[in-house]
Amino acid sequence: MSLRSVELWRGEIDLVAPFRTSFGTESSRELLYVRAVGDSHSGWGECVAMVEPNYSSEYLENCVQVISRFLVPLLNGDSSADDFILRAAPIRGNYMSKACVEAALLDLTLREQNLSLAKFLGATRSRVASGVSVGIQNNLDDLVQVVGEYIALGYLRVKLKIEPDLDIELVRTIRKEFGDDLILQVDANAAYTISDANHLKQLDAFKLLLIEQPLPEDDLAGHIELSRIINTPVCLDESVTSLDTARGALDLKACSVINIKPGRVGGYLEAKKIHDLCFSRGVPVWCGGMLETGVGRAANLALAALPGFTLPGDISASSRYFTKDITKPFILEDGHISVPNTVGIGVEPLPEMLEKFRRVAVFKIVNS
Image 1: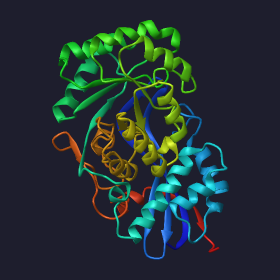
Image 2: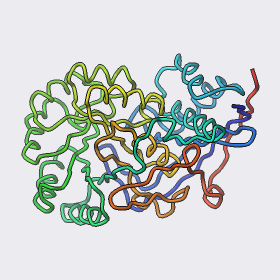
Image 3: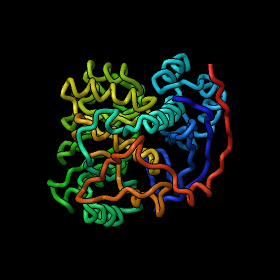
């Protein structure tokens, strides 16, 4: 591979409706893309960090600085994704920054090799079962209406965002309205503490697929205790930032399911390692979402097509979040979304959409 330059692109895209979780409400998505430019091809990576450090300690402006000051200087003309990850290892954390650089390098390399990301990772499916994440609504009537609309569209699983005082009644209402056949799970985004264990045990009555990240990300002991108290399977999200943290959580029985988000664990190479670990142990995994546009969504589909992803993930159709995506839209068909089967991630920004974005930095890469 011959890497000539790295570009940073910034922009913003409105959401079709506000998305509320336990840590805030988003009405639009501020975006950062990394473009790796070679001799005859270019590759794209999408940063999943949010504007504020609420979901994690990373935030968008921080990622711009980390990529510009610390990650790009590690690159040379022959840099591969594997080489980059090794060079970046001494830099602590900053997983989302590393992940979008890695994704751009992977996309560029695979385009030059005429190979798709799905095939490179070892995908075994051509389409992925699609679930939908439903934010906290203004009232129960609105929640029932929104969930009903998504079910009518064909989504195979519904995830409800919950927080203290907005939890048991929400789940009870949806179960009563749509029945036990609906695949239903909840996501707390670390909004509870272990003192809420008996309260959360009430969820056992509703036959949920899982409860996602109920306690703070650093409270592994609390998750171990909670897993012993409740029957609902505990899934970890924010707590899992690497292969090592995933292995530790499973060894200690802090969870029985893992949500794999490439941006949260530092990229697709690490995400595949976590998948392989879970697959070898018979632990189900699924691919979470971070309100990605088509660039990140395409790459996530390639990952979610691996054999260990046995639960429907959060990779919804483009229209779930955006009136017009930055790439060609991903469409829900019979509850599934097709995995791109062309070279690289299989998509790139549409010229008319890219015109609305700004190229904020260009870094020339010097051959070693």
